Length: 244
Ligand SMILES: O=C(O)CCC(=O)C(=O)O
Image 1 (cartoon, rainbow, N blue to C red):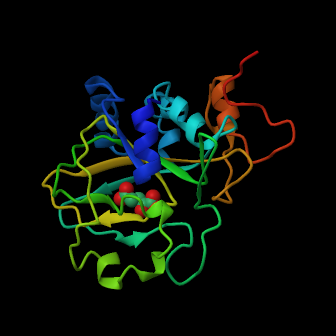
Image 2 (cartoon, protein in one colour; image 1 turned 180 degrees about the vertical axis):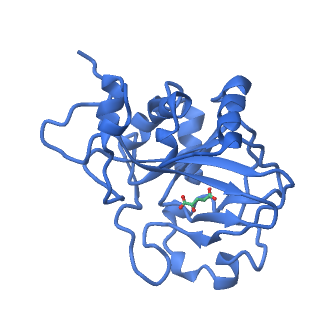
Image 3 (cartoon, rainbow, N blue to C red; image 1 turned 45 degrees about the vertical axis):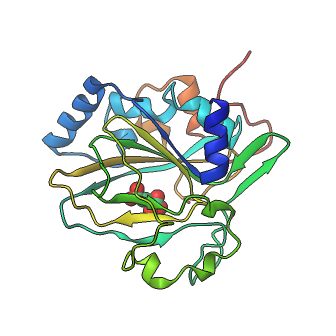
């Protein structure tokens, strides 16, 4: 992770990592999805999707932002057709809405080190240009002290305001965001289908989901992938990257 990328994540709470997947990889995954028959979460859809568990271009970001014991917490797809909606702005350290704090949504900085609770790496298999809709957020809101003051019409995307942005993404790009960032999904307006795969990670000691991965469903996994799929724990937990 470059110094400028660290600056941007600390400042804004999200980061676009360009061209992580090649055109061939995007095409292969889209061809699989076009055929239908997806069962379970994307990480179970076969080798190209299994590779995303610990993608070599993404793992260094996860370790920098969630620590050496980072684990995959859960993963799911978002497919949207033109006109589809999914819900307003949410997230942030206190949840920001009735229901109270989301204990796993947090961002901390100390002595040059950033740490986060639940974080997302969204693999984009289709372009989301400016105005297309899809992922939207309030940059910097992972550090806001006034989340409960975000008006309902802004949360529901009924009133456009300059501080809500929908970043443009290309197919193959990965969007990182911390769930401490206020974010949500704008109505999808493009003619083509939105295709996003959300791989969500927690620090090794914590879980957002109550359902842990069953590695017996995955066929062959590398030792590193097995470490990435471990349930949460602290004592003697192995680091994801084995440095021995
Ligand atoms: O990518 C999106 O549309 C937002 C997903 C979302 O709201 C979430 O991860 O909690």
